[in-house]
Image 1 (cartoon, helix red, strand yellow):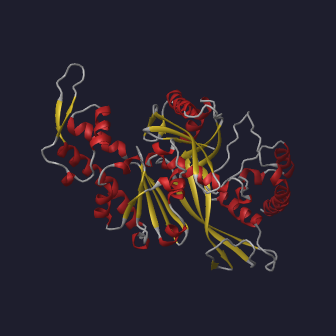
Image 2: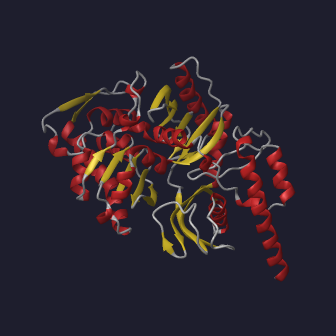
Image 3: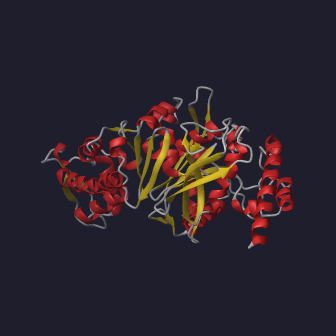
Length: 459
């Protein structure tokens, strides 16, 4: 499995397998500085492609046996949005057991929800299933009842932004196997079922964005991405101290502290001058004050969001900080002071098998690692066969069958969907295993098509 995270600051590629102990064994790791990306949006496809190629080459350099063609991709910038919907289906026979097929059809119906034209659906995530209007705390498969319902998170992204990322990856000679929503896979890789049940918020401080993912009662409650991150801190340092951007970033990484009172008021650092200019003496206290104010602004967004959703009092497991911005010294202390909640830093190592490559992993890698954990845990499960996209539902049965015979099918996942590039179809390796399921699916789709035809005739 290859995970690819294209961020504003860095492109990260990680190759790994999930072993029998449920831990990731890192086989390759590559990192490159991002070019052609601003505020999480690809502005120059060729520059972005070059950054991807460098990250992939570095990943291969760590393991000569790696053959990298297909990647799983994180999408998680500030164009990500979450829409909440409710769906219900009346069942023909209330005594029959609910099947996975019925749940898939319920999910499919959510594609009929209004989505702005410039956006596309990235994933549809069901939660709070109901049978006969009674809320369940578990999957309803195997239960019976007259009415099946569920609430849904519909995650969307800007079409142009996604298209430019796809083009950059494809031009780098890679095929995107599946998209994943970055804030969700970050959370999935860091928290366990106890955290989800108790209530927890995962705050991922990236370069240009900060992702907030909230779980409670075992299910995903809220997802949000705000357009502010570690680059804002770097820019404030650059402007406040009159430095180059590269110098400001270096000072932040090496000497940065999130609480200024913990800094020696007399300590200084010498920053070399550029182009023959004189070197600068910088007070570390001044640096810490700038960083603290910028980090307070980021955490203000988090606090306001939790208050707006009225969920802060439900987070008994507190807040987990991750992402590159979480590596600032004393950030835990500042976050606890501002939120009034228990805060802990993400521990990515508990899901890694120790080897030389795993030692270089840090919280800036949490998106890729969470993605790979999710894929590894769900890759071979039948539940990974998930609903067809709405356009397939609307096509004639013959067209759908033809697509299945050609082994070209768009499969929408619980947190992503498979991409097949137009003009270069990719074989679905699991198609044979799911042919029987597909046959049942086609019969259900045929029923829906006939029902829609009857409705149109009435109109």
